[in-house]
Amino acid sequence: MIEIVVLLVREFPFAFFGSMMVGMLCAFVGVTIVAKRVVFLGAVLTQVSVLGLTLTFLPFFPLPHTIGSLLVTLVTVMILSQLLTGKKIPRDAVLGVVFASSVAFRILFMQKAARVDVAEVENLLRGDILFVTPDLFYVMVGAFVIVLGANLLFFKEFAYVAFDSETAATQGFHSRAWDLAFYLLAGGAIAVATHMVGDLLVFGFLVLPPVAAMLLMRSVKMIFLLSVIIGVVSPVIGLILAFHFDVPSSPAIVAVSFLILAFAWVANLVRTR
Image (spheres, helix red, strand yellow):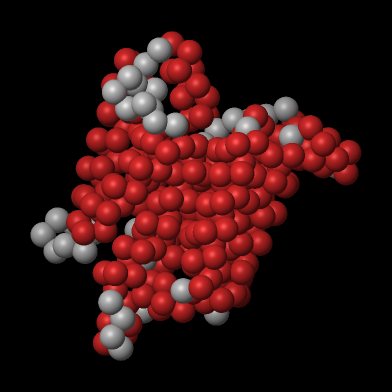
C-alpha cells in the first residue's frame, strides 16, 4: 500500500493531490446543497459544465475549455437562482428541464466537433483523472482558495440560510442574495472540478460525504468537518484500490465514498435503536 502511495505521488502528483482537493471542496459545498434540498442541482451543474466545455470545441465559441465551462455554468446559475425561488414551477421540474436540455445539446454539439475533440470530451465524461495537466491543476488551486475561503468567511450566513432559512429571513438575512452568492461559488467550483476530474466524481462528492456526515453528526460544524475528512480520505483509498485491482479511478473513489456512507447508515441505525 505504501509503495502504491509513493508511486502515485511520484508519477501522478497532480491527480493524487488534485483529487483530494476536489473531494474536500465538493464535500464542503455539498453539505449546503444537501441541506437546501437541491441535491439534483449538483447533477444539473455538472452537466451544464460539460455542455460549456463541449461548446468550446466548436468554431463559434472559441474560448479556452475551462473559461467556456465556467462562463456557461455561472450564467446558468444566475438564471437558476431566480427560477428556484419561484412558486409557479416546482424546483425539481426546473432542474429537470435544465438537466435534460444540457445533455441533449451536449450530444448534438459533440456530433459537430472534430473527431479528436469528441474523444477528448468523452474522456472527460469518463473521469480519467490520472492525466491532469499542471495548468488545470493550478486553476483548480485558485478555485479552491477562492470558493473555500469565501465559504469560510461567510460560513455563518451560508449555513444559517441553508439549515434554517425561515428563521434567517425573520432576522433580516436576505436569503435570495445569499443563495445567489452561494450558487455562484458552487457553480464555479463545479465547473473547474468537472473539467479536471469528470462529472461522476464531482457529483459523487457533492452528495455522498455530506449525507454520511449528516447521519453521524448533529452539530453543523461537525457535519462540515466530517464531510471534508471523507472527501479527503476517499480519493486516497480509491486511487490505491484502483491501482491495486486495475480498475478505473473515478468509479473506485466514488465506490469508497459509498461504502463509507453505508457504514454511516448502519451506525446511525444501530444508534437510533
